[in-house]
Amino acid sequence: MTKDKIYFDYAATTPVDHEVFEAMKPYFTDIFGNASSIHQFGQEARSAVDNARKISADFFDCKGSEIIFTGGATEANNLALKGILQTLKISGQKQIANPEIIISPIEHHSILDTARALQKEGIVVKYVPVDNFGRIKAGELATLINLNTVLVSVMYANNEIGTIEPIREISNIIAEVKKDAKKSNGIYPLFHTDAVQAVEYLDCNVETLGVDMLTMSAHKIYGPKGVGLLYVKRGTPIARIMDGGAQESGMRAGTTNIASVVGLAKALELIRKQDRSKVMGLRDKLVESVMKQITGVKYNGSKKFRLPNNANFSFEGAEGEGIVVSLDMDGFGASTGSACAAEGLEPSHVLKAIGLSDLDAHASLRLTLGRGTTDEHISKIVTALPPIIDRLRSISGGQAKREFKDKVPDDFGC
Ligand code: PMP
Image (cartoon, rainbow, N blue to C red):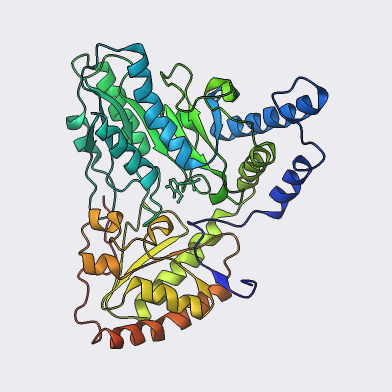
């Protein structure tokens, strides 16, 4: 049905790569055993999981025993936050009287809502602020950390505006804090990053990043939906949050989804073969053309610290939802705000956090590129967009009334 349509929503999900699909196929039918069974059917499945774990561990430069396969990134993020707090409960930790966690205000809902759920249980949640480009103010982090801080969770790259966060800088700050006995009890604070949007494009070596935990999801990297993983550094005090079987070293109960973890590993393997420069050139061409052809446009997010496949605009006087629907009718798949929030009428929390008014946040369009994007696709959308914006503006009662002050963010120096 969508064969002739053009996809500009790779941050929402990606198609399964044919090589990934081929790698998965035998595990639905021929090699169908339960990886926990001791007979040969089970052992064959087990060895596929072991191999997928090894490939994943190689990718993130960690040990296989530090990988927990999950049913996606939402589950991995829940496990990271709730699992860390759960250990405190179980061990009845007396050193940390009033546990606190620190997150950024632009996290995905799977972090934000998990933090809110913990808050209802009495955990203090603090937010490290972001600047107008969506970069966290790392300098302010140290002032938020105290002896009660058990966890800092900051995403590696944002799903709406593509801003890349200073993960190494944050882990350095935490390492410094850990040296200061007045602020740390040695183990805490732990550091988690949601790397879902980063895995395709950025270095995800957990040693280099200096993280204790890292989340990824296969369907953002041309793997299947419903599978992801949480890297957990050896020795990290974390408890399971789901009761049942002893799979994943007791950390994630439930029969292992063999085909999916095989697909996840294959998708990780394929990343190394990608030419990442291509997508950035196409994105830059897209941004340049849009800014040139349409007045009253703001380019949201950072220019310097940005995923190479992300573009996010606000078109004054045009409704984001209207733009997406019109683009859809013209054969383009795009998004306003985050795909997961697309049903809600609330303006994007990310755009609000970087200082946009409700009006400008509602006027946003996210275009994300991927392996299938071509030069022709860019030319086509750049031709389709101006009349759509004109039409929507005339419906809403006028053309762009003002020029945005910061049309293109000037953050090269920060
Ligand atoms: N974190 C980020 C940054 C995401 O973009 C997404 C997907 N939109 C998720 C977490 C949730 O991933 P999943 O769909 O695998 O649960």
